[in-house]
Amino acid sequence: MATLSFNPTRIRTLGGLHFTKSKPIYSPFSQSIKTANRFSANGRISQQPLPRFRSNSVSESSVTAPEEVELNEDEDDPTLEMAYLDSETDPESITEWELDFCSRPILDIRGKKVWELVVCDNSLSLQYTKYFPNNVINSITLRDAVSSIAEELGVPLPDKIRFFRSQMQTIITKACTELGIKPIPSKRCLSLLLWLEERYETVYTRHPGFQKGSKPLLALDNPFPMELPENLFGERWAFVQLPFSAVQEEISNLKETFMFGSSLDLDLLGIEIDDKTMIPGLSVATSRAQPLAAWMNGMEVYSVEADTSRASLILSVGIATRYVYATYKKTPVTSAEAEAWEAAKKACGGLHFLAIQDDLDSEDCVGFWLLLDLPPPPV
Image 1 (tube, rainbow, N blue to C red):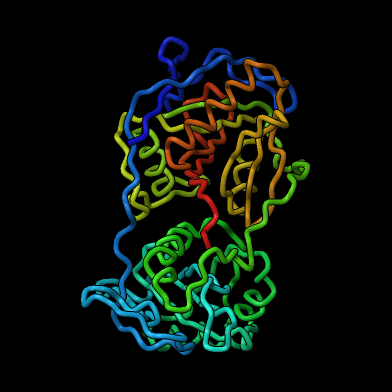
Image 2: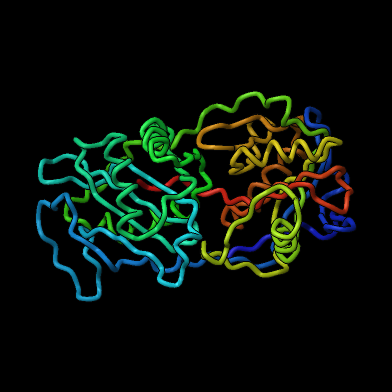
C-alpha cells in the first residue's frame, strides 16, 4: 500500500478545479521555479492484478516446443494460442486495436527465437495471440494475420492500430496501410503493455523453450530529449496535485464537453485509489491554451518526467519522441521539489496528469491528460 501527500502547511487551494500547490510554485518555461514543497504520507493507493486474461478458443502453436512440460489440470498450456472475443461486446464497437509483433525469450525446435503476435483492444474484450517462426517475419505475414483475426473472431478490421516498438514501425505501417488501417505509433498501449508483463510470468516462463536471462530483441527506445517545437510552448507551469475525486471529475468532463485530452480505464488496469489520495500533476498555462491543447491532443502524450540531473521536465509522446518541455534553475530547493514530485508519481504506480489552462489560477482546464508511466515490458 503506497501513500502520498503534500505537507498541508505548505499548500493552498484554488477555486474551481481545486489544484493545490506550494506558494509560489509557478514559473515561466525557461526560468527558475521558486518552490520548497515537500511530500509526506497521507492518502491511499493500491494496484491490483489485471483481470484474468482469457484463454478459451485456443489452438496449438505453429511453433512446437522442443520438449513436453507437465501441467496441472487447472493450468493453461503455454504452447497454445488464444483467440477470444467477449460475447457481450458488440463487435462493431471495437474500432481500435493494440498490437505487438516481436520475438519472445523462447526457442523453437531449430534453436531459434519464437516470434509472437499479441493483439487486444483497450477494454480486453478482444484478445489474440499467435506464434511464428523467425523466418517468416515480414509485412505480408502480419497483414495476413491481422486479416485472419477479423475473420476468425467475426469482427470488422479496426480503424486504428496502436503499437509501441519503433523497430517494427516499417513492417506494421506497411501491413496496416495495405488493409486500410491507420497505424498509430504510441506507448499509450497500456492494456497491451500490462498484458505482456502478465504473459511473461504466466506463459513465457512456463514454456518448455523459455530461455532465462534472455534480453528483449527489440528494447524500447529512450532517446535524448530534443528541443520543444514552438507550437508546444506554454508560458508558465507548476507542479500541482488533485485529490483523485477531482481527477475523476475532469475525466467526466472529457466525455461531456469539448475539452481536449485523454483518460485511462483505471478499473481495467487494476488500479484502486482512494478518493482523497492526492495525484501529482503538471499544470501548464498560456494565453493560447486552446491551440496548444489541440496540438497536444494529436501527439499521443505518454508521460511527464522531472529530470533533476538536467533541471528540466521531459515530455514523452508517441513511441520514442522526448522533448525538453520546460527548464528551471537548479538549486537544492528546486531539486528537492522535482525529486518529491517524481517520488509521488512513483508512489502512485506512475499515475499522474497534465493539465493545460488559460491561467494557473483558472477555474477550468482546456486540456487534461491522465497519464501512466509504466516500466518497459520484460519482453
